[in-house]
Image (cartoon, rainbow, N blue to C red; front, side):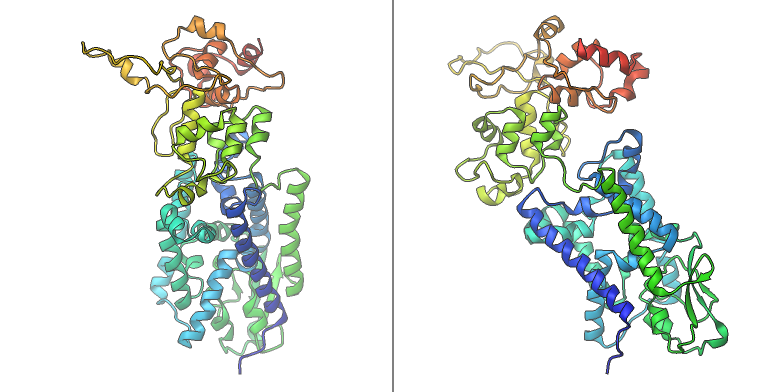
Length: 513
């Protein structure tokens, strides 16, 4: 007969179950509407991934929201106070491993362990994984690990296996391997690979929370060792100070002596397990309350329309959950022209369809939302490198008359002409005509810029972003700001001021002239 579960452990399992089910529900709803948060926004590790960019100028890496930073801040405080409490009580991925671990015990009727020497080496793997992820993320300014992230793959399962394999093939393989390993070796991913677990292990070196053993009442039954999900040696040391401890307190509740042989301590003083749990909840949800008071507890990106109203809309803001109607309205593009540039039939893909559903609705294999970003960049005349690095020039050539006769054979065109993209189809009369690539700076200056009174030029903005916000071209913005024509349009203005000898106050004054 199975031993009765301690009330504290029953509560812990219920908590983890609610978090896991809640996350799964959100992921299903996110596939239906952009008003629900994505898995990227709900993953606290994203707060660390975007930290450098956020501290530098308040900007966030794409797909990360302010609420993600709040969650990570809560983990930092919680980790200092109660070690890896988050891992043991709030981690949905840990809960999922726990489910597979339970299945493994039912199937194999035993618990497997990795040989001690190999285990001690493998537990160090998560630290270089953490360093590598942070280094390359901060260097590139993108979620570079996303295609390999098993949590991201899990979060997109509701979109269907084909969709997961199209974007997260490696991450899905890692996810499957992690779950299978968890059936044999409890919480294998947590022990050996998890970068957030590495963060919590580092924070847990602050010796505030520890489980101490009273040797005089210990009967050396090793039951505490057997129930520990992280395979920590509990029955021999005076205190459990391993960075692998996830503060689950399974060992404390399993101890058969009933003489406080294993005691939870805080700052060296014995504390009841219930108070430890209450403190853990208070710290984490207290951080959420602070984030709410500061207006940062947001896990859903502002709509394209609201970005446009604020003058901060860029091509990069277009997401797979955006609709064709929202894209056309926000960027001031004729809906018919948008469909034409993307190469999609509006009869098959209605305007209210999300971009990420285009492939399924129109039968286009491998369709990605980036195709819409590229099309919008071409239409409004702003540079966009594309997720695959295919640069879209800042200015496009105006459409030529349909009846124009083909050019007669002659000498090869100058090399510069080859850089001008092919002409686009004529736009409706209401759409503004693009400025020719060969237009002289004086002509661009005469064209001017319509700068809203509430527009604020920020040092974190690039010239391309300013052009998109003002629905103009990078060439016109460059002339307006009095900057050299060869200045980089894809780098923040503040990063170029020393090279080109301007100041941000001077640029802010010029944009208002």
